[in-house]
Amino acid sequence: MPAATATVPPAFLAAYDAVLDHWPTNTTTSELVTAYGTTHLLSHGPEDAPPVLLLPGGGATATGWYAMAAALGRNHRVHAVDLIGEPGRSVPAAAPANPLRTADDLTAWLHALLDGLRLDSAAFVGHSYGAWIALHHALRAPERVDRLVLLDPTNCFTGFSPRYLLRALPMLLRPTPARNATFLRWETRGADAELDPAWLRLLALAAEFPSARPVTGPRPTPAELGTLKPPTLLLLAERSRAHDSARMAARARAAVPRIRTATLPGATHHTLPAGAPPETYEWIEGFLKSA
Image 1 (tube, helix red, strand yellow):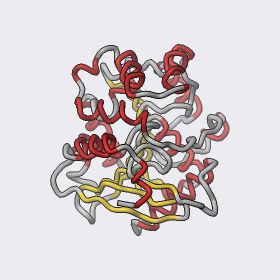
Image 2: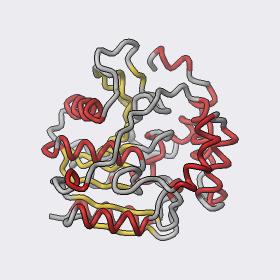
Image 3: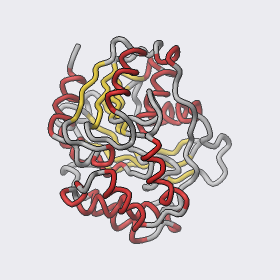
């Protein structure tokens, strides 16, 4: 483990490892050093299978993709990434020559990851903020994105619900594990009682992680979205409180005529990805296999 992780609360690292225990057998961990820092990855599936990169949402880690890795890892080589500057085991460079500040920087970082994995391209699956990163990467470097799956994305086609932002405000201003847990209970409409307690504990403890300010930026314009080249699947949480899912689907179809859309029954924004309904994996597996 890099020395820089010594500042991370031990309880967070213990919770991280508890969720990592849910990953399938033969999962491997690795670290790729880039100009932006050291990126921690979890990998599963046949080494010669088509590659898929999984990008978590803000405040989440690579570990939450364990069910997705089990489902996709039968026919794909899955690499789940801890985002640099976000909770997890990735470590920003102490004095990076080019710190992560813009969407272009994130694209360069993903280029470095693909190069480190010796991949010309890969399919990308992103949730929430991870979907925003994946979409910007696909717009900037379509030759390195085989297929794109956006799992209840944020700030890609529409903005956040004002009610969602208002409820999130206390957690954003002064994050604590209790505030994180309260917000998750509200957004999941009480479904947190049915979700994996180890995963929920990790999400709550992320409040104590020494995160950097995330890279943010405007939504892509309709004109920019119209240039999107990789085949794209948009999966929306039926009961998401982060945004109006029907409105987002309409906006996406208007901007990207070839986009495929589907709604995940019963899902909310924060029950994903670990608590995704079975239809999620069927949609993604079928999409990745389609011609």
